Image (cartoon, rainbow, N blue to C red; front, side, top):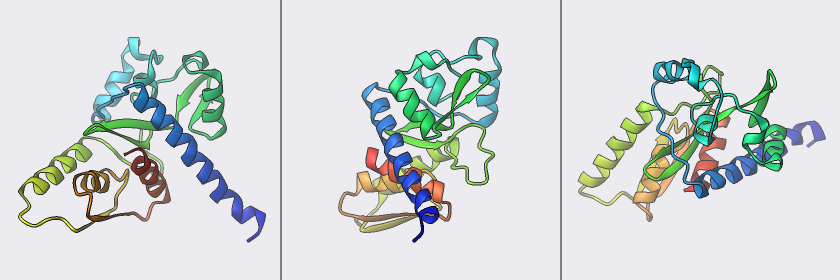
Length: 189
């Protein structure tokens, strides 16, 4: 394989490590964020008092612009270098969001989710999780295998794997970004 073909895989592997490190940091800090509908998200961010991020929930949940001194310089540099945050008009902005569900954290695409490879996470994810939990409670047979088709962030597969430790659980998706986020989320779980 030539060098040009090898670079994207190396960059993805580095991105995964930086995302995983960020996720672990957020876990250690007790970060929690429940993702709302896109319209609620937009309305909340349009309020004058919400123009600039004041904390990690504002940065990685609400995806508000933030000053570089909100995070340690070394962390900011790694996030910039790996395109997890970007600079816009002298401020920084996260290119991913982190949401909590059932005591777990999940990385997914930043608001608004308009990119062709966007990985959605929101109210439907929480409903899907409740449906999975209900099925697991009511199942008459032990779950031995499960496949989360179109896994997105991997939330469904991860919830099943955590609840059914002996089960073989697969998360599949045609979107490489979804598979990358799922791998990070699974490592965090």
